[in-house]
Image (cartoon, rainbow, N blue to C red; front, side, top):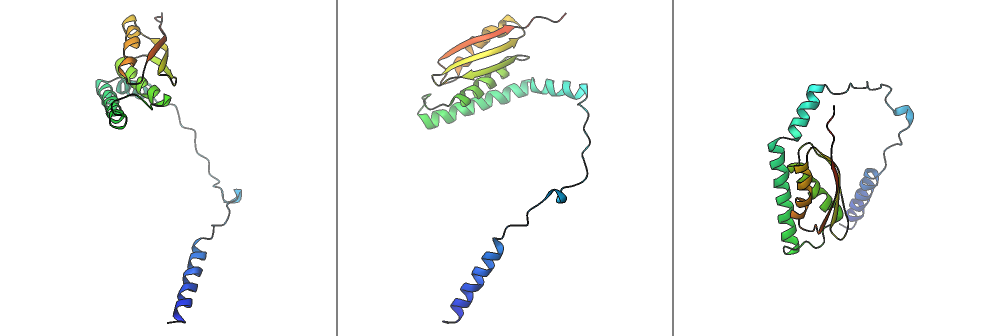
Amino acid sequence: MKKLTPFLMTCVLLFSAAACQNPPARTSADAPTTTQEVTAPPEPQATEAAKEDAQSQLRRDQLNADIRAREQRNNAFNDGKATGRSESNLESEVRSKLEANIPNGHLTVAASEDGTVTVSGTVTNKDQLAKIDRLPKEIKGVTKVINKATVAQAKS
């Protein structure tokens, strides 16, 4: 038994040393010689289908469900308060809320530590512009909304 223990320990050490060796370094000589072809831009029909999907009622329902789930997580971790919410979390949630309720809007959202949310960009009509003032306030943690959005001029 006394001779078997050192032998087993040596085998384990040798095996582990062999397993931990780094693979040989790769060089540019190992790089593949084939190149990829540049793909063509998507077809207009595919672009329009993607746009319709992004603005569909199903997509809006999914965004609203995501917002409710975030609020529930916030309530579970913060006893229903809006403390400890990061700016990126607020930005993301407000962006989702606006995207779900203002179709065809081109909006950007910026949040600060004190809960102030600034919304910039364009919307298609005055009703959507008015929604920007009230929708972000439905999100816990938003204390003030600065609306810098404008109504886009119709293309002639």
